[in-house]
Image 1 (cartoon, helix red, strand yellow):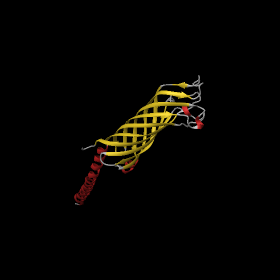
Image 2 (cartoon, helix red, strand yellow):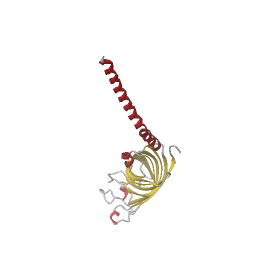
Image 3 (cartoon, helix red, strand yellow):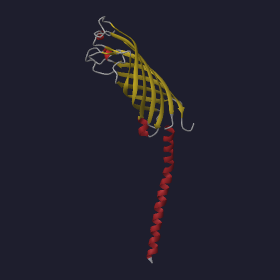
Image 4 (cartoon, helix red, strand yellow):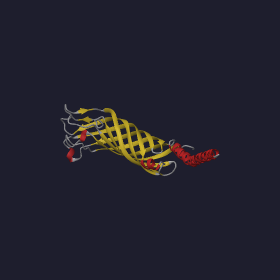
Length: 244
């Protein structure tokens, strides 16, 4: 006579467990939907930005000595970028950069080279941004530092150069008016959201190039390809946002 009673209690316990599980899932559903909506919204944000700032070329053309990698080549950079967020913390930039670089030997320690030049540099790159605070908070932050990493193509046109030594260039000097090569870009930045449409970004990036002719000159003693440092201040405008 106790068997039906035991089965009833067993079924009752199973129903209670099922109801608790269902209640837990129903309770978590709004949180899950909000999180999914946040990810969906942020993954559909698209920005366009313009920026400008100084650049610094570490080229062999004005190296202080055969073992010195320093340079006095200052550039002005102008940048445009299309940024799309794949996730709240991950975005990619399709970026174009133009720079005008001029180098000279006014620094006394560089007079052993006597090389002066003007160079127009262009760059196209695909850079990935990792938003650090958004990554740990799992939501967008109005002020967010980010890491930069990506490949690019860089080229230069060097219309003019001059040596202070009348015997230069000699047979050991290699000169080019045009060059193109690849590069790897790494850096850091910070994004400041001023409104739902307007933002500011400040970036510093390191461009490690495969070419040694951004300044037009590759001396026989050169042991390094060019490195270009870029600092930019950008203004961004939101082109598209989910739900708008």
